[in-house]
Image (cartoon, rainbow, N blue to C red; front, top):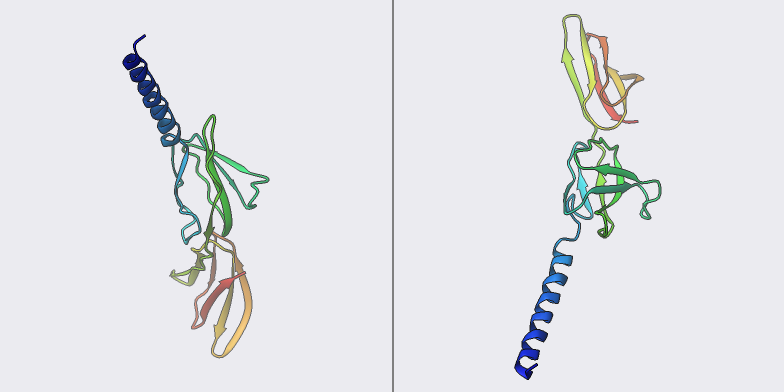
Length: 161
């Protein structure tokens, strides 16, 4: 073989190896959303991933007791700090974290003879009734639930349980 032909074959080999290395790293599983260290106020968000088959989620940094989510899996997470990574058949991403923020939201709907107090947040509520300057006992309203109360001149205040 000529010296020139050997050089061409070497450069072709280097080029092919370079392309394979590039493809290996370019197709690695990636976490797009949520960003690392991000605080989310809506617990109904969607994981955005690329080149991965599953999301591995945990409340522990070492991902013990993981929740495995495949594509199109829906999950509602309570407030807290979460750690996650994505994985395909051969590779996995680095571990990132995000926080779901507590959201206290009390909705008051007027009905004919009563009010309906509805917990629209993502944490259980203790609701205090204030009549004049007197606070009365707490009413517990869990996430997504509501409770009817007598219609009067009272005000209501909700706080995280």
